[in-house]
Amino acid sequence: MKLPPGLSEQDLCLRLDRFQIETPSWGYADTGTRYGKFLQDAAATTIDEKLADAAVVHKLTGCCPSVAVHVLWDFPPGVDPVVVASRARALGLRIGSINPNVFQDQSYKLGSVTNRDPAIRQRALNHLLDCAALGGRVGSSLLSLWFADGTNYPGQGHIRQRKRWMQESLRQAHDAMPPGMTILVEYKPFEPAFYHTDVADWGMAAAFARHAGPRSKVLVDTGHHLPGCNIEHIVAFLIDEGLLGGFHFNDRKYADDDLTMGSIDPYQLFRIFHEIVLAERESGADLPIAYMIDQSHNIKPKTEAMIETVVAAQEYFTRAMLVDHAATAAARDCDDVVMAERTLKDAFATDVRPFLAEYRASRGLPRDPLAAYRESGHLARAAAERGPRKPKAGGSYA
Ligand code: RM4
Ligand code: MN
Ligand code: MN
Image 1 (tube, helix red, strand yellow):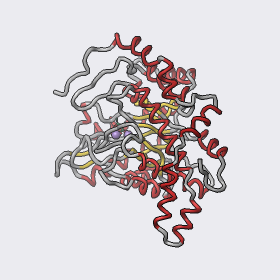
Image 2 (cartoon, helix red, strand yellow):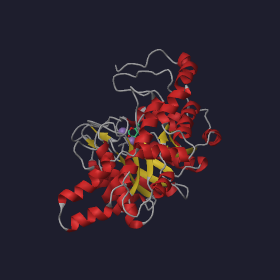
Image 3 (cartoon, helix red, strand yellow):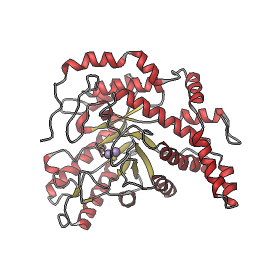
């Protein structure tokens, strides 16, 4: 494997040791499309089962110590989050980002914090404040906010008024957070709203984050862009503004498809990591970015898809570390566009899998986490245990 001057394999290994990826509780559960939900016998149904699967992923990959939770889905009445957090610890995990849910309740049909009805706005805000407090209790450092708020038809909402309501709620959530917690503002151009979304793009998310206060940053969900969008440009821009807080990684072909990372466009993933690695080399420090997965594995077995994703993240992050930045800069200095681009393509084309296998072995981990998973028999055991308890159908669209 060709390394850029000044970088050793040991350097790569040490950076990989610090490259941690958060897996989402909902990625282990049965999820569906608008048209139906296809149940998998092995998919988790309770938070304990989700944590058990996350622990398997962490055990095999060594780099997924935290699990994102979706408050409503993971902590139904009767489930004590503090007890869950201690069970997570017993499995070698911790609770990661707290994801409030202000999109599912019937009252949120026309919006949550941007609803015209002050009582509904207050209800949504109260949930955000509860989630902030919950974060403190379970030792989480991230309040990750995604709003389904938006409108379907021109004239349906007063856009600037709604913006101010959003702004006000974010500021209040920010000010109520325990010290050490950060808000991440996630944007999305459409869906479920089809005319306007209240936090539609990275610029709006950045403006909201700035208004909210200093402990507030932007979350880039790779699937939340209109086709053709240059995501790595957004990433570079947010890094420079000190506003890149984290990622929701997934891949997509058309919209918010939530496919496994790198399955459709691995070069894009590489280009995103390249911007991060370049900034880290220039500053000499790791960027404080929360790398999180947000995927919905409708077809693939959940835990396998998660392992595949984690492995892809490591592969493309490692490839990005192979870019010879001095060579890129030298080519750029003489306006040699062809050679400048080639420095990226050379790194992208490098097969880093043998190196990563060695790296894992040196850390006492399986060389091939997916193969180790298949050998472990976990999938069949989970299916035998969980399958019989599941309903026979996933529900219907109408
Ligand atoms: C959204 C967004 C959020 C996720 C919900 C379920 O599209 O990606 O991050 O929590 O879906
Ligand atoms: Mn997301
Ligand atoms: Mn999404």
